[in-house]
Image (cartoon, rainbow, N blue to C red; front, side, top):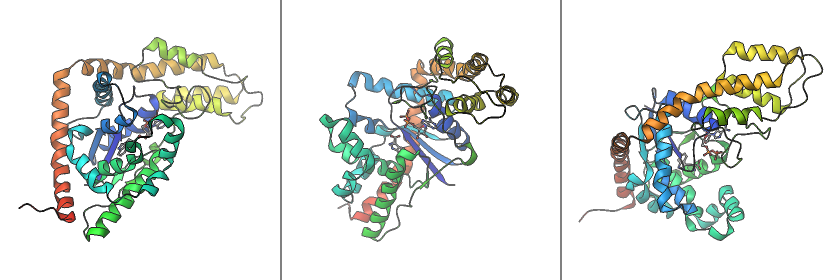
Length: 329
Ligand code: ADP
Ligand code: TRP
C-alpha cells in the first residue's frame, strides 16, 4: 500500500484553511492509504519556544487533529520527538547536504530576512530534517502546499544522493500528493487571498460562535453588482468559495441567483455563511474540548503512534546504517 506522510509544526490553533486544505483530506485517505501524520515539534525548536508553552502547543494540535477525525487506529499519529530514529537519519543525511544548497533554499533566505537575530543552523538544515521525516518511513507521497515544494525537492535529492553514494536502493523518491478536485485554496475574510496563521485572517476550529460571527460580519465586500450576471470581484468570490465549503448546495445556488439578478444583500449572505461555519465548527470544537482534557486518552494515542512510527523507522534506519558501513563488533 502506498505510504502518505504529513507533518505540521505545533504553533497555534488550526484554521479553516488547514481543515479544508489538508486535514479533511487526511481523514479520507487514512481509509485507503498507509498514513503517517506527525507533529513536528523538533522543527519548532528553530524559533526557541518557551519550554513551559511547548508541550501545550503539541497537545493543542494533537487534540485538534483527533477532533477533526484522524483515527489513531487507522493511521500512525505521532509526535516527531518520540521517534529518535528521525534524528539519527538527520545526522546521516546532513553529511550529504551541502551548505550552498541549503543557503539557496527560499525558506532559509526568508528567515534570514525576517529573523536576522536568530539565524541558527537548525534553520539552515531544516530541509534535511524534513527529508528525514519523509525518508524514515520510505514515504511515497507527501501532501504539501506550494511553500513546501522546494523542501520536497531536497528530500528527493538527498534520497537519490544517498542511494547513489552507497550503491543501494534504500530510499524511494517522494512525490507531491494532491487531492485532485478536492484541492482548495481557502480564502481569508479580508479580501487578501489565502487564509493563514501569519496573515492574521484566520477563522479557527477552536473558536466560539460569537467570535466567528463577528469575523464573518466584518468581511470585506464591495458596493454590489450593477449589471446582471457580471463576474465577481475577488472579495465576493471569496465569500462564495467559503460558502461552497460549509453550506448546502441550494443555499449557494440561492445567493448565486441573487448575485446574478443584482438583488444580493451581503448582510444576509454573511449571516447565512456565519451560521453555516458555526454549524461546521461547533461539533469539532466540542470534541477538541473533551479530547484536550483527557490526558489518559492523549497518552494512549501518542504511545500507539510512537510504537507504529518506530516500528517503521527502525527498519529503515537499519538499512541506512548498514549502507553507510556501521557494523557491530
Ligand atoms: P499557515 O499558512 O497558516 O502557516 P501551515 O503552513 O501551517 O498554515 O499549513 C499547513 C497545511 O495546511 C498546508 O500545507 C496546507 O496544506 C494547508 N493550508 C493552510 N492554509 C491553507 C489555505 N488557506 N487553503 C488551503 N490549504 C491551506
Ligand atoms: N515544514 C512543514 C511546514 O512548515 C512541516 C513539516 C515538517 C513537514 N516535516 C514535514 C511537512 C514532512 C511534510 C512532510 O509546514
